[in-house]
Picture 1 (cartoon, helix red, strand yellow):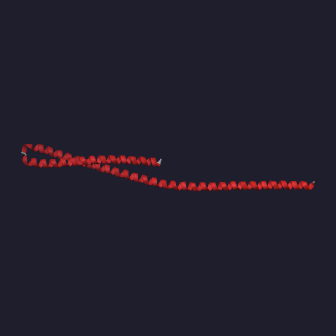
Picture 2 (tube, helix red, strand yellow):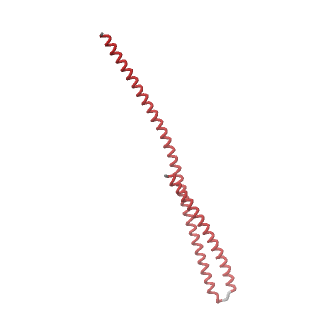
Length: 160
């Protein structure tokens, strides 16, 4: 039962690790993409600022707002990544604890089985001693009966 639970925990951990790695890769790609886009936007913004007349200032403000949004999204993705890494570490710690419990239980099982083997050998020895005692008792009883019978036969023959 414990082995099955441990195996299920291992499988769950494996799936969670795979999912976390997949999500982490996606998040990294998203972050890299967002950072590249952010840097590209920064460069374009700087170029536009130097080239664009005053009439395009509202557009520049819109671009700045988009850059801020992109920056916030990158921070959000980073927070998600930290959360996933934390959960992964917790799952790994739980798996390690489960493995330690399994090792401990296997040790106890081994000790118990050894003790059972010793006790079974002792029971067998005691049973054999009992059987030998019963056989000895029966032999002594039979000898007693035979001697008693002979004694009575001799006594009868004496009186005749």
